[in-house]
Length: 389
Image (cartoon, rainbow, N blue to C red; front, side, top):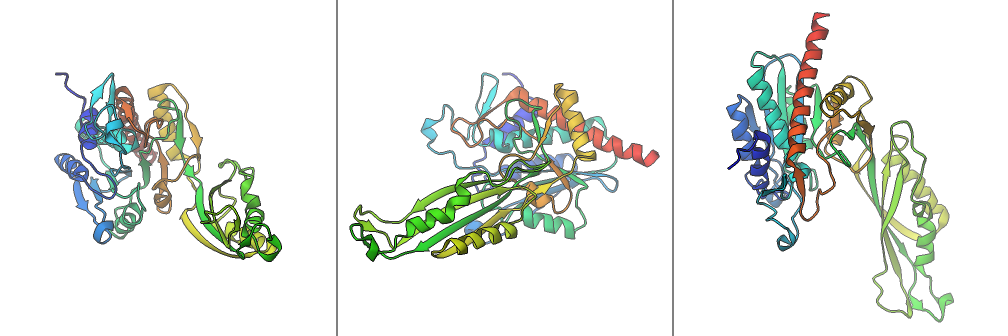
């Protein structure tokens, strides 16, 4: 039997842990055991109550000097119908140079890579100074209430906050080296309910159809794009995700219509400014309405500089590609980290994340590990050079 590289073995063993949010599934236990052998001090940090209780892990090694933090999540989305998978979704099966299973891409492959990278640095540079920490949550794919956010508060209170963070989300569209995420758009959702008056469709003058009111109110969101973007963010976009009357009859004008929508927005807006804009429009359009809002993320940006230069240089050295700095895509726990330190995201190719037959290339996981090793070397070397200057 071929001996697996450490990053592949770690990824396989993590996939075998059925850590569907919020279950720990043995994944944090595995990581904690591995890190303790490398001399890390580990803290298990549970937050929440009852079924919402989430296990988290913070591990740190070293004293003083520069501090590099890795961040990620071991929780995964449900696998769906297991019989539709070519391999059991929690088997970590290896075939045709790929490793298969839920979380292979998002993001157990990246965790395997940065665990192996940390081990490599400790083994090859035992004299190196500085601190390395890992913040691993079990709540990224869920509500993200009892994971990274409260752990960061705990880390800050204990004086253990890293200078910079790397989050191992799958950022590359086609190949390793395509893209670094150095920011993310904000996310604002709304549920708009318009009241009318029920009536017979043959006598519309005796009713008040809420649907025309609703259509006019949704008009600015139906365009899809609500601005042109700026230097760091592409256009802000809106999507109407549901329209419902709860009306099964073809000959009855409904008494109520409800719509749901989501806006992904850049730094030219805030949740409050978007709410004010839409509320003014709703008021001017008319209709008896109620609106409820859900803010899941604010936009953030890590300006191009030392951290993005270090990560870009490491990627370019190992792949020969100059990665694009991007703020595209959805949200991640980096939105919470950005309140404390500079943060970027770089991980595997994301083409199969959350899909049936999710899988990652073994060679990609090794390449990612080597990029993380180069990043660590460049980060700590840059600090030493600045100290001696």
